[in-house]
Length: 245
Length: 245
DNA sequence: CGGTTGATTGAGGCTGCTCAAAAGGTGTGG
DNA sequence: CCACACCTTTTGAGCAGCCTCAATCAACCG
Image (cartoon, rainbow over all chains, first blue to last red; front, side, top):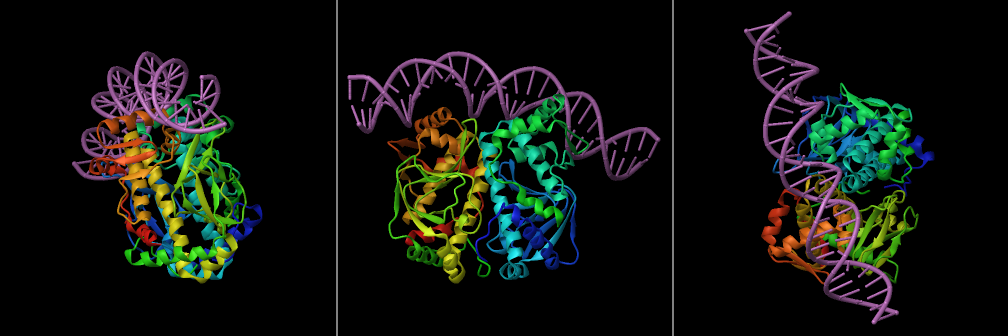
């Protein structure tokens, strides 16, 4: 590990983007395609790879013995996943494709070497790990304290911001959304029935609608007002760097 | 970062304990005492230290603008906290003392140096980071899918196991528990009133009781049966190594 | 002893769940 | 091109878990 790395700092965004670009050299030549619903990394699997999501959505999900399920993370294009497996033992949860997805594979060994020799690669990897923890913290707050409406508003805004960052715009007011309401419920800790009702209310009030697997945010201010209590205080613009990449 | 580090492996426990012992040389001479309720690391503070909890309980907590609060992590003696601040920017959440606590401080710079030069120190630090993520994942599952009863049972068992590991026994069936029911509610995403009712039921059914700030598990099997759906599949014995230390 | 903090209990209400059924969409095979 | 199966969304009715508000009780402390 190089020296101290400071994340969430505007001046680091170019270094971040550089690091991301350098990962290109480490990826296996041919990205792999996965159909929606298929498993990308099996539960408890030990594999020699780290992945970068190129297109589509994937999620880490825990299946409870009695049939309940809970998503632990949703990855969007540009995200690295199974990144910690390069440094530590494998995760006990599966990673599945939420939509059709294409994925680049990076050999753990080569990534580790690059991590040690190139500070920008190290920055890119560390950013992912820290970002993931930030999301987990927000997720805990959302599940622990948020109402259904707050959780949904918060999530839709988060996706909007993350997709916007990758696309280079500030925020995506319209974006494809591959999750079924059932999966959305398993992200939010709600039943699909209740998700549906809340979405209907938000739609009828003209805040946001999901039609044909596309989210349309009609009233961003009002939506943000609902999600406001769940917003964290972190500076959020570091991810923007990956836009240029 | 040395080479790949495999966690949760029995054969690594001695190395883990060694790493922990080596941290002694890095701690400032005089541990600091904090009274219950005081802030150890302020929100957004940039400080030059990592901490190791010697005695007492501390927690990372997020305060929402409207008064709600959610704990993101509870640290028990032996845990390192603010560990990521050695490598990345500071966290946006405060760390507060849940009971009277004594805390050792480690200079970030010296810790980083040790991290790079000593694989056992690196292992100890990495273990903490990964363990923290494991807890966060479990926490998300617990909040998203667990009933109040399941969450409480799961949490009391987790503390039991963690304290047992530190004490060198398999599990602590009786342990001091400094949290108020209000704080417990903010850990579990429940109101203190409801925590109280569920605890009453568990007490009346002879499963577990909390009296005088002491948890007594009377029927471990029954309690585990309740928490069972929330248990993760991870091998849990890596932490045992820290017992000997 | 008054004051404060935390535990406990009650009554009542709302959010979100369960069960169930119908409607819309999509792909497949005849 | 239709018919069918399957998946997802939508809607209804009823219920329960958890919350709110509020009051009482217990413990501790100056």
